[in-house]
Length: 193
Image (tube, rainbow, N blue to C red; front, side, top):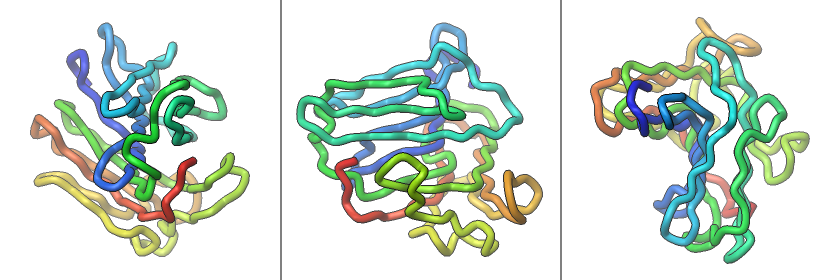
């Protein structure tokens, strides 16, 4: 991430074919920060953290989204601390979330970028209630609906870097410029939270 507004997202919630909530890193005012983007009607609202993320370390990242026509919200939690929040918005315009993209589902004008993911859980309540296991320990993306990559990017399972167990996921962008992506996706039962 070199220039202001360069960014990438680790998690994106989708409703139909529309992104409704994003969690990642974005450069603003010359500083890379945690970034939360939430749809407010057909527009987007962005919130930034007060702190900057560090490279080469594992984070526990949680994205919470709630659909409501006037009191919708988005929250970004990092290592158990709320770092960004957006509330009182119309998050209902595109309907319920039915797909979650993980890895590097969106990169804009970033150089060569690699993200590792492991110990992924999806739930309708706080993570204490586990609703999905990432399946990376199988050595494949078989627990996911599929993977998606743009030209030059990769989504692989690796034993080289993982947080726990034998395998984790590796998502890489070659930094070719413009908009790129490398992610796995999971279709879920339609959810308003």
